[in-house]
Amino acid sequence: MDERYAGHRVVLISKTVFLLILFLLCQLGSEFKFQSAAENNTKVGDLPGPEVDGFTDMMSSLQWKARPPKLSSCCREMVKLSSNITITCRVDKGTPHISGIIMESVALTGKIPEHVAALTYLQTLDLSDNTIHGSIPYQIGYLFQLITLDLSQNLLTGKIPPSLGRLSSLQTLELWSNQLSGEIPRELGELSQLGVLSVPENGLRGTLPPELGKLSNLEELWLTSNNLRGDLPKDYENLKNLTILEIAGNYLSGRIPRFIAKWDNLYFLNLPNNNSRINLTFPEEIMRKYCPAGQKKSQQL
Image (cartoon, rainbow, N blue to C red; front, side, top):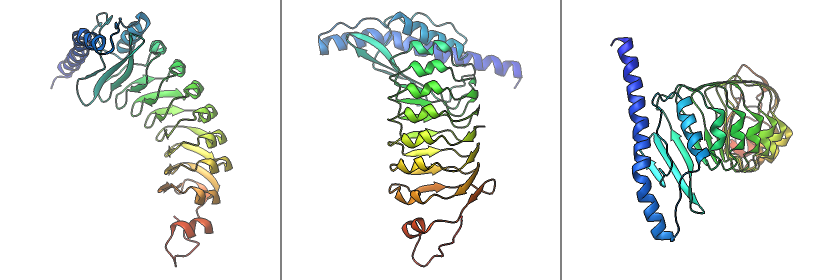
C-alpha cells in the first residue's frame, strides 16, 4: 500500500472516531439530562467551560486532526464506543463533569497537554498502548480525584513528576514500557491508597526510595528492567499487603532481606538476575516458609 495513502487513511479514521465520540456525547446529552431530572427531581446543567476547553485541548494535543465542536451540555453517565474507548461523566449538585477518559490502543500520537489540569473531576485516565510522546506534565498532580492513571506502553520521556505524590486518592499508577528516566520520586510514598505501582521497562536509575515503605495498601510493586541500584530498604518491611514483587533486571546489591518472610500475602517474587550483585541465598526464615521440607537451605534462584 502506498505510504501516503496509508497515512491519509489513519488521519481519516482518527477524524471519524473522534467525531463519533462527540456526536454521541451530544446526542445522548439531552436524554441523560431528562432521565436525571426525572429520577432526582433536579435540573442538570451544562459541562463547565474549563472542562470543555480542557477536553478539547487534550484531544487536539493528542493529535486528533478534526477540531471538535463545543461540548457544552453533551454528557451522560457513560459512552462506550468500543472495548478501547469509553468516556464517562457524573453529576455533582446538578452539574455534569467528565470523570473518566479511556482511550486504549487508538493510535494517539501527540502529547499530554498541561491543560489536562482543567479536568478536575477525572477519576480515571487511561491512555495506554498508544505512541504518545513528550513528558508527563506535572499538572496531572492537580487531578486530586484521580483513582487510576495508566499511561503505559507509550513513548513518554523525562522524569516521573514528584507532583503525582499529591494524588491522595490514587489506587493504580501504571507507567510501564515507556522511556522514562531519573529516579523514582520519594513523593510517591505519600500515596496512601496506592495498591498498584508499575514502572518496569523504563530507564529509571538511583536507589529504591525508603518512602515507598509507607505504602501500607500496596499489593503490587513492578520495577523490572530499569537501572536501579542499592538494596531493598528496611522500610519495605511494612509492605505487608504485598502480593507481587518484581525487581529483576536491575543492579541491586546486598542480601535478600529476612523481612520478606513477614509478607504473608506474597505469592510472586522475581528477584534480580545476573546483572545484580545481590546475594541470592535465601534466609532460613524464607526457606522454612516457602520451600518444601528437605530442600537445601542454601538454595539460590
